[in-house]
View (cartoon, rainbow, N blue to C red):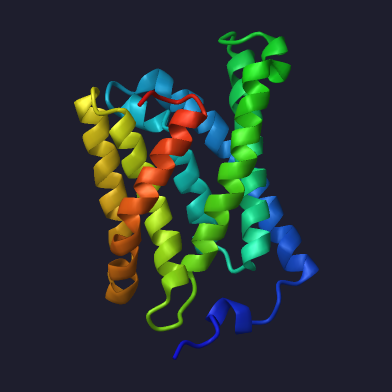
Length: 213
């Protein structure tokens, strides 16, 4: 018999808490966008490739949802806010140092990145919140953890020709799973779900134009 998830039985997120989480998301997004631009300029291969990874940005949204104490819905909204702000702060920083022109802010590719940011930010922000479920044997927590490992493994699959980058991405996926080492039941469920979720994430990447079959 299963019990109601602990994040559902906890007091609902207040308006003040939601505002604090969204403010944190905005600040984190600003930092993420600027930091990403800096890292891809100063780091050597394969670290620059890793910094410029879509899956790493998804991992940032997951971390926000995992570390805050907001509801699943607020965590998803915060994840979307963070990645949207990150996209625009990335391009603003690039414009500031003459690596991009001002029209880049409204370019079609930027709009596409903003759309991806909303979807990925919401999905992985909610995944982070789901991992906070302390119900023994929770499949929800396993799904949130497995999805995050899966997006990293799918990107490694896409970058298999760049061996070092792919290997680093796999190691990050292993670290994500290991982050819940005190909850072996959650890790076991995440491992069960990781393989099919990796295939789904790979298909999503290809359909979004990030790679080929």
